[in-house]
Every structure is written in C-alpha cells, then in structure tokens.
Image (cartoon, rainbow, N blue to C red; front, side, top):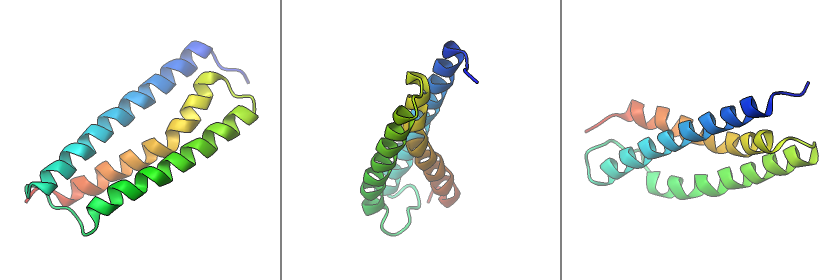
Length: 101
C-alpha cells in the first residue's frame, strides 16, 4: 500500500532528528569520559571508530536494498538511516547506564 509521501518524508525527518540528538548525547558522554567525568568501558575509544564503519556498511546495504525494491526517496532514506539510528540509540542507553564518575 502506498503511503502519503508527505508523511513518509516527515517520518524520515523525525528519525533523522532523533538520530542527531542521540549522536550529540553520545559525543557529550564520550567527551566527558575522556576528561574523567563519565564512566567509560574498556575499549570505548576503539569502539567509537569501529562501530561507524559497521553502521556505514549496514546503511549502504539497506539503502541499496530499498532502492532495488523501488522504494520512494523518503523510504530509502529511512532504510539507510535505520542502522545508524539503532547504533546511536543503543550507545545512549549503554553509556547512560554507566553514569558519571
């Protein structure tokens, strides 16, 4: 069933906004951790680089799959954003549980 393209674009936009807010939260907690104000787990500095490559690969595969299925631009963007959003959301949850020093 075809969705309203305006609604699809709004959903993609909201998801992008949430991902950006989550990413900023993760950056803030990691920065505080590097300054000694937030508890970071072992290997956090390596993790923050490795996870980007993995999320980028998953994002590219999701985008390619969506485009091959004939998805609208908004649905394709949402598909590409989903792996990144999952990672930012899980990082916020994980780092928040570690808490400040």
